[in-house]
Image (cartoon, rainbow, N blue to C red; front, side, top):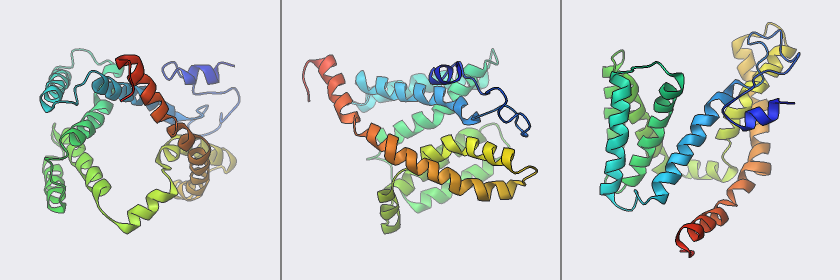
Length: 235
């Protein structure tokens, strides 16, 4: 009875159901991917906050936000006075979001070029094994994602017309793998990947067309409502 409401809270998660997947390698875990949703929603809330208070309207304002975040991140990264898992995960998972926000804010000044990708890869390789590698890698990976996103390609363009199944692939992969692992005993890793991929893709496709795409259609209505409540008019 508590499985659905606790997981909808995103914070007080319940991973098990009585008698389900008890003999799996990861026993009594229905969907281990749920752990990150709390931090993801918090990052979305951060994006909304930054936009609503007008930090994106001026580059200087946004730089202040970046400076405050960087100071907090460095204090945690260098000091770590308490090994709080909540704080550690918040900083680790929010850094890619903040980098993406910065790339978007200053996109007019950032050249997206394949040569820069090679430089980023070189920096990542050079810093591998050092303390700054996680940050350098995330900076490089974020740049590469935007480079691919802005790359004018017919192949990518046609792929985007199919739908965005990435979120569904992440959410449904774990339970699909658990089902197969519980059904096919002693299944090997490569076989599990080969069998779970098409099953997960089917679930992700249904999720996109039946739920996610329909939910995204409501965003303009919600945006207009928020602007009206804040400013008294629809802009």
